[in-house]
Image (cartoon, rainbow, N blue to C red):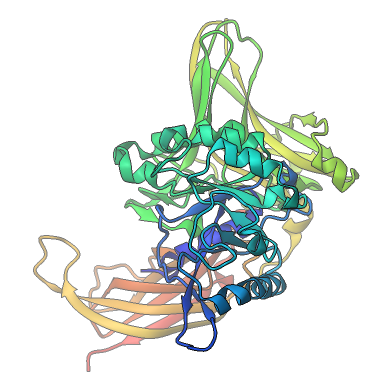
Length: 578
């Protein structure tokens, strides 16, 4: 298994760190008591989860005071959720607030933007007694850290009381009201009625902690997971605020969700098999269903049946009623990207009944932080398409290299919006011909904003490429009908390369020498993708010895420019039978 798969749980936090907005998945701390007889002492120990636990995950959402891009206080690093469901000794409960304050200060120093959240279980006298609210019995822990996560069996009366509780000291947004999606016990909402709990929470301007959203997968029809996921979150949509990811150019997203049933690159299938790797997840679009005037509708969802890059594309389909003669604008992304002179590329497929064009919304970069926080009026921009013979495309021929595909449409535009901030990306959909009820579909493969000035930056070289931890194995052939014994290579590849402008790395192999003359030399074979400077090759079939194998690493840049092979990392492995 490649190392990037092993670290998929860590990437849940990293993805959040990169996006800096919205969905936050808490990483639990397990506090275990040590064997000291004279004092209450606790050590902090991370739970060792190698894969994400859907049932045990808690999604934390903040309220309106934390919805803007600037000075956004939700963590850019890990969120630590302190859950101590045990009876405290007297000395332990007295020192716990000191420990919490120390932990919180250390987290802030070591990981700027991180948060420590206390779970509602123990009260100030050490008794294990869930309160389902913040009150005088547990406020001492709230005062010592960044936030408070209530138990799930609250009532509307608990929230009304907390809303009037004078000792919250203006920190209502730091109170995360727990919602159990499984609806265990006497709770408000849960399951497909979770939105009822969020409505009450939002009415009092508290934040929310949604526990165990894995209910959708674990209890519903797994063959309809995508549909049920969209249904679940669509019901919560009106109670969730927009958290725009603050990004810089180049900004690229192919809407990959980090899993799929095939791996695509430039619209072509590289490998046909199921996979899951959250490290591959890119900035996610809006997923929604909306009714249009009359009996029309429009929806967007992730679709793994075809993709431009990664494991899925964004599928937008619907019905445009005959009375709707003006273009429909399908919202795709909400972001915060300072712009300069930029090249825009978008890749799509659409049905012949409609025409497609981009619509952008920008704000003035000179607005103050407070003004940016407000719902300022955005300016609409419709990028003008560049002809194929435009000088910019001719100047950088690699822009269109390997992008022209028989089934995908690739379009380029040039923006000169220096001093503006990109806020919204949408798609204008216009019916063709005489007005009539028109069913349509459009598949978005990728959206890309490139800083034109950075296109002149020279390419870097892969450095310090090494191969270690080599293990040779013999086993049955790759075919189920094979009776021969094959040789397999297992090895760890490591290299150095700046990851700032890299989407991923492609790992290849090719046989240089071997006893079988029927296998062509120098034919590159894709082994896999790496999302860090480390990759573990497992059970790679190789030629019988004596032979020579070359392993190569290609950095795949965000701007889509192919690097010459002279910039790749290369190492040869010669082997023989002993």
